[in-house]
Length: 103
Image (cartoon, rainbow, N blue to C red; front, side, top):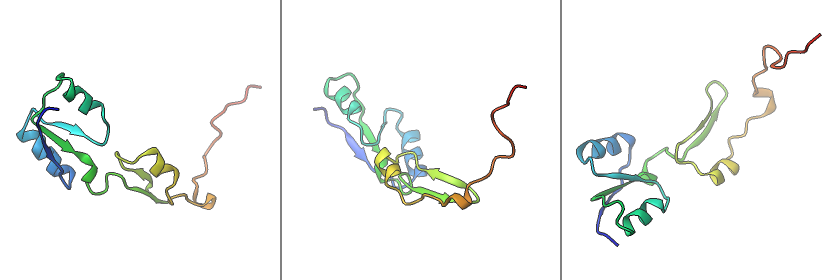
């Protein structure tokens, strides 16, 4: 395996600063595809930026005024078992039927 540095920023701003300073840096968020490319010598980044530590990136929240917000790093498992489910009383009602009937 090749040698590389792993940086774990705590915010999106920090991750963007690191990317701006090191154009060779690559982002990683838990997948293994990038590590396989490094192992085979296809990619040889000096720095990996681990996005999993960014606060709020996996957050799932529901607000009746703003709707559902799913963070970019939320997994399917997180979405399935989240406790954000609103009650049907808060669902918006359509103003008109999306299907037009022909006469």
